[in-house]
Length: 629
Image 1: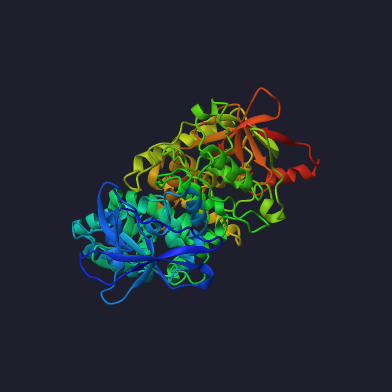
Image 2 (image 1 turned 90 degrees about the vertical axis):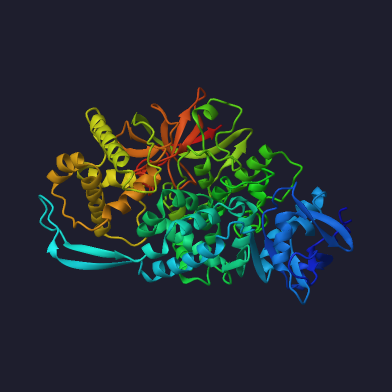
C-alpha cells in the first residue's frame, strides 16, 4: 500500500524523509514532512538508481507498508543512523510519482534540492563480489602518484640513442614504472566493475553530483570521497602511463559515461563550494575547460545523449538545475519541465532557445545519409535522446569562425515553419574527400600503429591528388596546415611562432613513428628543425585519433583542407554561419538559398574569422540569408 500524499503548497515547498534509528537489515521506519526551501533545512540528498522495479522491499512510512526497490532500500539503510533520525531526500519517496503536475514542479526544483543539501550520498549499490576495497584503495594511491608525478621515475643512461639521419637525438633514458605494484588482475576487475555500475549510466545522477557541496560514494560497506572517483577518471584518460597499464577494456569503460560526466557536466557547474573546487587537480581541470571551451549549456547537453533515461524528455529535464540552463538575458529557465508535451516539440523548443545566444548547438547534430534523405526531419534540431556511436565527437574548443566571440555579438536566427533562418558566408564547395576514417578507436596508441599510419598516408595522398588540379591555399605552410587539420588545432590565447614550430615538430615525430614513407619522402627533405622527444608521438596521435575517427578528410574547390562529417559528399558547400564558432558543411536543395545541415567541420584558414574578414573588402558580397531545413 502506497502513502497518500497531501498536496504541496505553491512555491518552494518540498518533502523531506525522516529515517528513524535502526541498524543492519531491520525494517526501515520512516515519516515524511513538508518544508520550504527558503527555510534552508539541513538534509542529505540521496543519489541512486531506482533499480529493478520487480525486486522490492517494504519500508514503513507513517505506519503503513510501502514497497520500494531493493536498491533504494539499500541506500536508505546506508543513510540510517543507529541513534538519531536522519533527515534525507530521495525522489522516489519525496515526490508523488503518480502526479505529473507535482512531478514537473519538483523536477524544476531538483537543482536547488541537490545544491542546498548538506551532503549528497552516492549509493552505488551492493558490493556483491567484495571488490570495492580493492578498487578504492588502488584508486586513492594511483591518484596521489599522478598528482605528484611519481607514477614513473626516469633515469638518464650514459649511452646515447642514435637515430639514422638525425644528429639532435637525446641521451638514452630508462625508467622505473611505479604503477606496476598497484595494478593487478583483481584491481583491474574491481575498477572496471565500479565504472560499469548502473549508477554511472543514468542521466539524473549527473546533476545530482554536479551540484553537490560534498559528495561521498558508498559501494556496499566501503566508502570514498567522490572526488577520488572523479580524479581517477581524469587520470585514466590523461596519463599515458596509467592508460597503458589499465588496458583497452578498462579505459574504454572509463572513457564512456564516466569521462563524459566529468568533462561535460561535473566540471562546468562553477559552484565555489563544490567538491570539484575542493580538489586542486580537479579545479585546475575545470578552469582549463572554462578557458579553452565554449562553456555553455550546449556542452552539458552533449553528455546527455550517452546516458540512460526512462523518459526521453529527461535528457533535457535532468539538467534544468544547471546555472547555464537559462534564457539569455532573462535568467528564466530555458524550458520548464512538462511531461505532457511531445518529445519532438521539446527538442525543437530547446534548439530555438539555444539559437538566441549562439548557433553552437548545431555541432550536436548527428545527421546520417538516411536522416538527410527524410525531409520531414529538421536537420538542424539535435536528438539529445539518441546517441549514434558512429558519429564523430562534437567540437568544443573556443574557435571564432564567425567572430561571434571577439566581436561579442548575439546572432540573429529565427524559425520560419520547419526552417532555421540564419545569415551565412558560403565560401567554397567540397571537391575531394577521403573514406570515413575508421579503426582509430583503440585506446592503446601503439596497438593502433597500423591504422594510424595508413590513414595518415591516405590523407596526405589526397592533398597531392587534389593539388594537381587546384593549388592549395597554404603556400609553404602546408605541413602546418595538414598537422592542424589532423589534430583540429586550437591555439592558446597567448602564443607565438614557437607554438606552431612545436606542432609541426610533433607531426614530424608522429610520421617518423607511424608512417616512415611520409617522413622519408615528404618531411625529411623539408629539413624541419625539431627535437626528438621520448613518447612525443603519442600526444599528436592521441589528438589525431580523437578528432579524425568517423570523419572524412576533404579538399575544397578553392584549395582549403579540412575534416568533416561522414555523410558529406562532393558538391556540398562550406559555410560559416553567423553566430557559430566553427564552419559547417551544408547540402544545397532545389530551392535557392535552402540547405540541409550535414555537420560541423574543421577547415584550416576558416577557424578564426578569416572568411568573414574577407568581406570587409566588399562588404556583404558573399553573405546570404539562408534557410536550413
